[in-house]
Length: 163
Image (tube, rainbow, N blue to C red; front, side, top):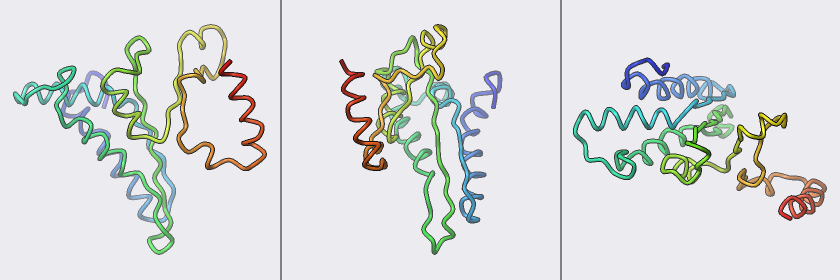
């Protein structure tokens, strides 16, 4: 659903997409779903909830918006061999307001996912591509998935970047 579509369609679009991805996963295929973007999905949900006179919470979002996004993102999975070994990978995108990763929706999605890649407009405009802010980007599983040689090289590199 596009930005000009009604809030109800914007709310339903991610569920429709993940259902199609689950079809491929359940038929022993590998699928990728990119949620572009869940912050707009949350705004559509907030709009519908306010129209329905549901009580607003933090930043006027309904109190169950975290549950809504976690339930959506947890539909991505890898099936075992007995179930066909299909997989569905989810990449949620969140647009921050002025780079504020501490806002309600970004912090919710960050807490659900295994990490985040933070892209910065200033880096992009200065010619750095991909425009990844390595200071704000995080992986909770990166070290566990690396071979020993990569860990040795990246360990000193992380220290150099931190200084």
